[in-house]
Image 1 (cartoon, rainbow over the protein chains, first blue to last red):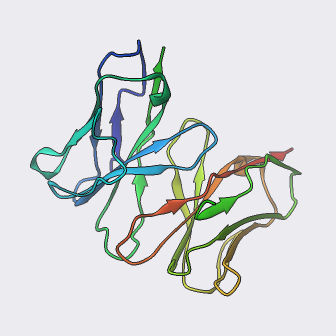
Image 2: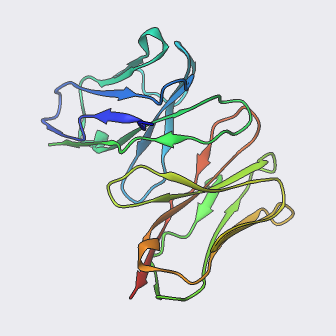
Length: 115
Length: 110
């Protein structure tokens, strides 16, 4: 069974440029998460989707970050414009359900460097 | 003060040693406790999952939860070089977001 797929794995951009990350969750997983992981830190939740609905986006900086999950499957996370402090790893995860505390399956992450 | 505190290490041990990794937390509502392992440039993967207080054993790994002290531990017996990774504790309450510790870097020397 394929795991969570993310692309691109690495991205280097100049500040003020836009960037987008794509995630394909495990088939059948209704819940999709985007996490931010800074160097030496644990993942921090940016947004959680239940099917197409964003049910928790309280930590998403909405002035420059946006996300969508069309048809309840793939998801895209966008940053526009990027700032130096956005350099980090963006992790996508999926789970069967967010009720209780089901196992999260993570992708390998998209590593962003903003110059 | 962070909700979950975890010593970042690095922790360096010889092969075959018993490793103890720990986290403390402040939110008494947490009920589900997990340990994730993250290899370099990879995503975290679930290692152990415990509900409420008590112990859970899986092969060389044992997870302990002491809710009265708000303290959780992961023990690794007969540590191997392949155990070298970052270990992240994580916890949550029903229906809420998972909160991660900062992770402890473990290095097992052969």
